[in-house]
Length: 213
Image (cartoon, rainbow, N blue to C red):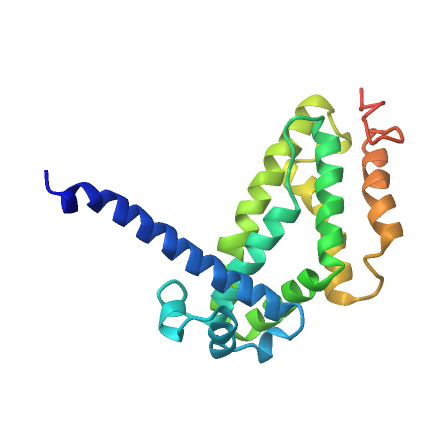
């Protein structure tokens, strides 16, 4: 066998690794810009300059600035808002809810607001955000909510979709309307109050002590 033949698979693998490294550098550059600039003022040129790549390289993966920003936001968000599956589902939901609220209280929340605002004039952006982010994350939450319902039957025969809206919608209300802050008190108290209404209580270590009978 020729040495070039033996080396071919390794070269292809190395190319894939290099491509992923470049892709990650673009997402990192977009995240860096999002922390200091509004979405509307960020350009493909600025992202390319920050990442040290050409615009053509960016367009290999994304057809618009909005899609780069959405994917950058998603990678950052998922890394900071894990959903645990090794604890009681009520505990997992509270921990996930608090992590999400803490993220939305900072610059990631501003990014979400700007994406949703741009989506009002460009339905394609809103559709991409739903498909790339919202549906997938909602499915993750729904799985845990359904586990909760099986363990702790909730009042009024509420379904998983209704429970998810009751739990998570206030974050978006505060984010988009600005009528009240996503502050430490809200982050600490709201999910516990919601679960108390459902008959689920926690101790000081956030362990379930009185699930609904």
